[in-house]
Length: 159
Image (cartoon, rainbow, N blue to C red; front, top):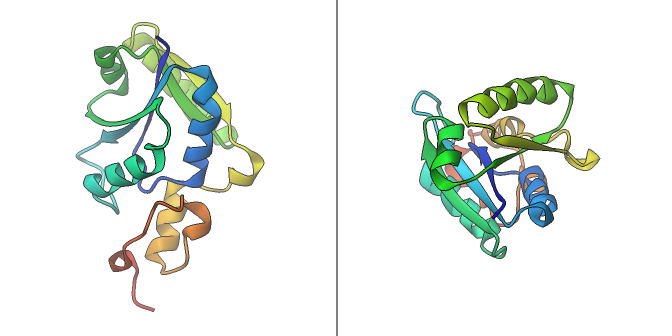
């Protein structure tokens, strides 16, 4: 079985993430969208909220599962039997960073392969970081997030 892991913080999930998973569906038997938990990182949204959004977005896709993990992505992949990592590339900076990580994962993960998909042009400007800034700044982030994601009002700064 061809199992791919699409790891990320998904803080929050964006329409670019969703597009990437949808485009990868024909390539794999199963895609696991997995939230990596990094205790030293500060998140805008709770793990529970991010997991709920992922379930809400991907429940309609039988070959997509949602999970969470701690520590190294490559070790998680080995534990669940995934031989592929799915990653999106928006620009040359993404490529440089992701290439290095994929080479390290290949070594640490005993030959795990990273499959890169180039972001569609209409999504190259969207990142979770930018969407968080929009939300914290009190602007409307709905053009950048899936319709299933309802951003709590409490994260918006007063005008």
